[in-house]
Length: 220
Image (tube, rainbow, N blue to C red):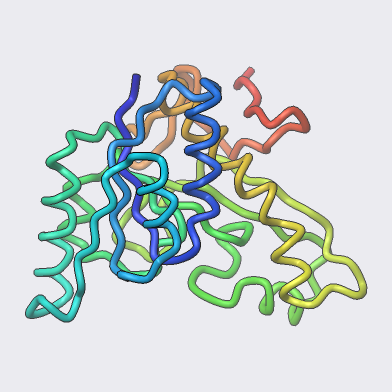
């Protein structure tokens, strides 16, 4: 059983999806805590309703970003997580803190990385005239949205898509992608070795693609 701590800044839909998968025994994990930088984040209410520790630290209470990050991750470390999941956590994390958790922290990002790191990914995909859009789960490194990509899910960009409609169609796949990626890590299928991902004991040459049944394929 893999102990997990989740960081979220907003509504917590990806956190809720992980929690649902844990509660239905689909994932061999135990979510120990939800940490947030926003006291009004709905994700905190989801955690409290599930009896999970919901913890808020306010960035304004610290001298700088590095001090805040050290305090936040020190609090997370008290739960002895084997994995930290950034699920809609909207702050850039200090590089020194990131390096302490290298290989034990993942993020879900709403684009087909390396396309569109950062914000406003749906708008950027539409403006670029992309035929496909999607989401990526990657190991977190000091480079913003630049860590090795574990897996992706993609959808077509339709002619009438606006950013909100594109985001709404993608969201259910984000949930399934995150759950599948956490499952693969929890079962020992996925690990970061140096700068490369290994899947099923073999180097991963390209991100895995989410299958129709919500799983990630084996590496042949």
